[in-house]
Length: 215
Image (tube, rainbow, N blue to C red; front, top):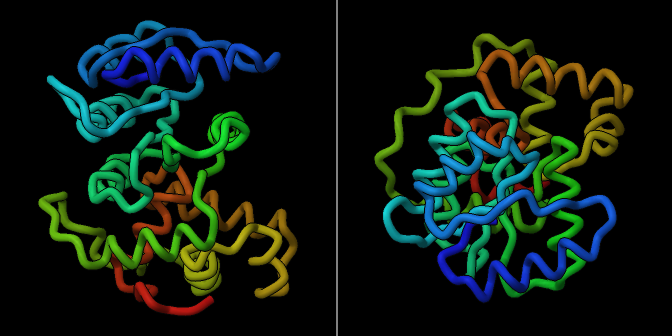
């Protein structure tokens, strides 16, 4: 758990330690300590606050995901459209969670991210990426195109970016869920993606879908 406010860390610990399948491996009060503790403890999930001293959550997320660590980052924010959340997703976070949400949402989000999925509902995906498309940034340039994908993989990526689940993509494209998972895995491999969130950002960066495109 990474947050510069001890009371918040304590509150999260009380919630999480009540769950039989979750162990709190450690805590950090800033991004620099988070990177060090993640390397030492190798947790499944890092709960990462955004605004912190020394090194913020975006920088810490970038270092953690760029190190090749298996730990997945779940960003914590006060506002669900915090501009810094977009930067964290670009940096490789597997999703985000609003701090003042219900306790069961926190627990479920951790389990979801630990299982390799992203914490972004279709509604939140549309709101976030509409904001994302209008935010300036100094990140590295987006991939130059999707030519390395097959036509079917492009279809899958487009549907994924619209917030559809694997089952919904399978129904839309008349495919089996197993085939959809295979296509998504190949998309991830071709662009070195870690999560569905990064795949959504890729689709918007390359112009495959527009911020206001309806599903």
